[in-house]
Image 1 (tube, rainbow, N blue to C red):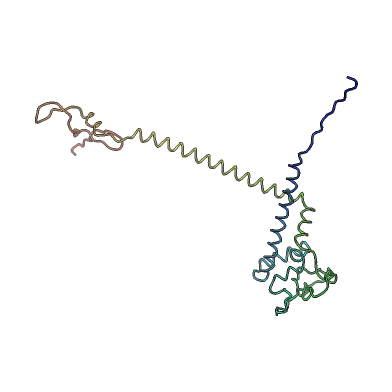
Image 2: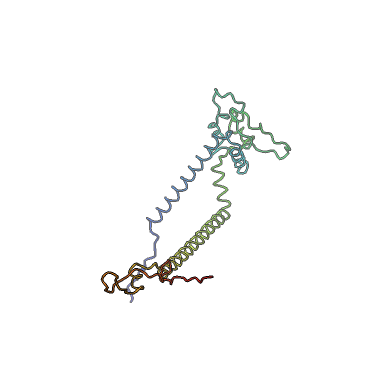
Length: 240
């Protein structure tokens, strides 16, 4: 009708759910960063204690072109590389060779390239070592390879689900076998039940009591014996 206007309410996204999801992602990612930072720093402390751990740190720093968790100064956590005056190590105020900027023209790796490098100013350090931390470089690598990383995690998840399905199928088969075995065992016991004394006496039939002369139950005759399967006639043997 003329003069009347209809108003349509457009769907809206719930504010509570939106902000909760946003906050959850931030907290979850800050937690991931903190755990990664703690993991790298703990490995920095034990750099010289385990050769496998040392190779892992060197690989990560070379692959991501980084040094330490947040930067080169994280190597102060290591007793061999810290810059305290009481440190007698030749590696004092230095970094591992994996932090160094490699010269493509070098044929031989210089493992002493990081010695005393942290005594220089930060701008001067950039010409010798990588000054970015491994946590930030790892985050950048994840963003650049998000599809590949997501595909790997999806593949791992599918393998786990497949394993769970196989395990559940195996459990079902075991339960079915146990049920069949229990049923067969019950049938076997019911069929091969050992006879009771009353059954034996009733099978033998009434006999005359030798004292009173009255008929009554008598013990099993010599022609009947019982075993696991029931009542059987006594076997006879021929004289040879």
